Length: 139
Image 1 (cartoon, one colour):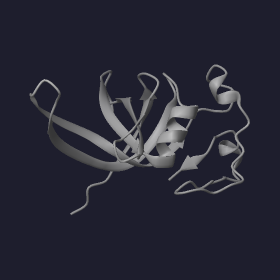
Image 2 (cartoon, rainbow, N blue to C red):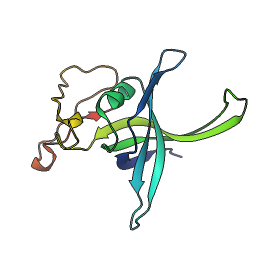
Image 3 (cartoon, rainbow, N blue to C red):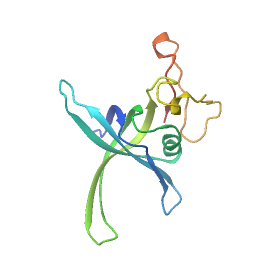
């Protein structure tokens, strides 16, 4: 059995960034993904951790087009009011920016230098002309 999902869509809002009680950086965001052959969309809650969370917080904004690969995770917890809460979300393993440079406000017009490889971040470049304007892939 395999728990893997790939979603392509636009962020509904800027990611929210925080740090857990153990010091792990995380970012939460929702992706609106269109259904095939339909005018309807699904709104998929996602979470990213560590360096991927930092990059999502730094470079993504409402309306950013992304592709994510990850796994569906369900969890239960008791909130501050004492109510049991169930959560289903996609834990992001890989994040790809799909907006062309300069196409999303000033957010995507920055020059992204990816000369250093930290944690699980890896630069992928394509030699095909169709992909020359795409940004980075983060794993």
